[in-house]
Length: 603
Image (cartoon, rainbow, N blue to C red):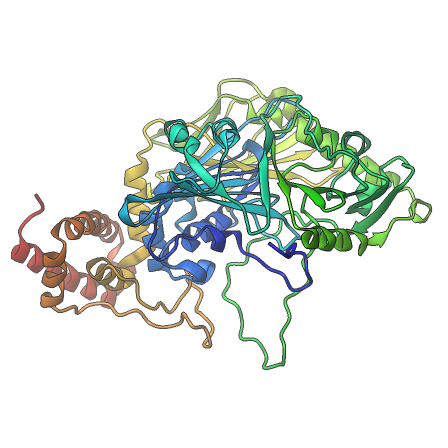
C-alpha cells in the first residue's frame, strides 16, 4: 500500500474486492450498513455471482442464477428506519426480504458500522476470509469513501491473529443467524493487511454504549482528521498535534467553535437519497482520454497522527462527532500503521480542501429551523418503528394492523403506507385507527412480501418527508412458495427456453437485456441474445453422466420453477397469452418429459 486511493483518478470497487477468486467458492457473507438500498443489494449479489463485473448490466437469467446461488449466502444488518423504499420492485427485489436484518438502536443512537465479513472455500479444503471496514453504505452515490481490506486464512503461521475481530463480529453482526457458530474458526484466522501496512487492531461499540475511541500516538507532531460531519465534542475527543488539519464540509465547519492551531478546510458534502442507476450506459463519444466524473462529495472518515517515521491511521465508520467518537452510536474503526507516502498523500488531500473562513459564512435561520424540524421528525417516527405491527390476510385482502395506538404521532404528522410490491397503492393512516387496508382483493403469491413502506411528514410541512421500508410479521406467508412464484413470473414464458438451457448446461449465455428488461446499448461487451431450446438430448445426457448428483440438484430447482410457470400460465386469461411463448412452453414441457424418461425420476 503505497497510495492512499485519494488521487484524482483513483477508483476502487468494494464489490470487486470481495468477489471470489477463480478457484474459490463464496460460502457465506455478512454485511453491516447504516442505510440500505435493495438495488445496491442486487448489484452486490450479481457482483459476487458468475455475472461478476457485469453487476447491474447483467441480464435476467444471470440475476435468477445469482438469486439461487448467492443470495441465500448473504445476510445484511442495517438500521431499521434506513431501508430505502424501492420505486419499483422489478418483480424480484422483494425476494431480498429474507436476507436482511434490521436493528432498532436505543433512542439517541444510531447503528452506524459499515463492514463486510466473507468466507470462501478453496482447493484442498482451504478456508479464507476477507474483512472490509470503511465508510461506504450499501446505497447509491459516488462520494469519496475510504476503507480497509484484510485477507485471512484459517491456520498457518503467517499473518496476525485478532481476537477483537471475533468479538466485533459477534457484537455488530449478532442478528446474522450463522455468526455465533463461526466464532472459534474466526479466532484461528491469521489476517494480512495490504503491503506495507501494519494492522494493530479494531475498536468498536454497540449501539447505546458510551465507549470513547482511543486515538493516541505519543509525541505526535502532525494530526489530520477527515470527516464529513464534525462537532465540538468530536473535535475535543481526537488527540490533535502542533500541526493540525481538519477536512470536513462547510455545514459542519460552520457549527464548530474556534480552536487555536487547527486549520479547517472544506469539501463538498456527501449526497443522500441518490438513486442507484439501473439503466444500461449509453455509448460514449469517441474522444481521447475519457476521465471519470469527479465524486460528488466527501463521506470518508479517517484520523491520522504522525511522529517521525510512524504514521498511525484510524479508518472506519465513525465521524468526528461526539456520538461517533464517544458514543452512543454503534461504530467500528481499524487502527493501522501506514507508509509515510500514504500518510503524506492523505495530508495533501486534506490540505487541498477550500480553506474555511468563518467570517465568510452568513447565518441562515431558515436552514437551522429546517434542520431542527428534521431532527424532530427523526425522533418522532420511533413511535411507528416501535409499534407492534402485523400483516393479516383475509378474504378482502391484506391489512396492516398495530397492536398499539400511534395516535400521538398521527396528531402531529401525516403517515402513508404501502406494500413494497405495490408502490402505486399508497394508503393514508388516519388518526383513531389501528389498521389500514393495504391490498384490496387477492394478492398474487409472487407479490407477497414482509416489507411495508412508510412516508411520514410533519403537519407543519417545515422539512422534507421521510420514507423508509421495514419488515413486518406476516403470519401464513410462505417465503419459499413466494420465491418460486416470483422467479417463474420474472423469467416468464418468453424467457423459459433460455433459462432451461442455462440450467441444463450450467452456463448463463449472453443476454440481450439487463435484469430490469432494458436493452443493452449496441457496443456493450455483454450484449447478445441468449439461445434457448432446442438443445440436443445427447448434450443433456452427457451433462447428467458427468455429475448425476449435481444434475439432479439443478433439475429439482428447474422442476420447481416449471411447476410455478405452469401455475402462472393457468392464471393468465386466454386473451392475454402470447401464442409464440405458449407454443415454446409446450416444447419445453415435452423436452423435459423426454429427459426424465431417459434418465429416470429423481431419487
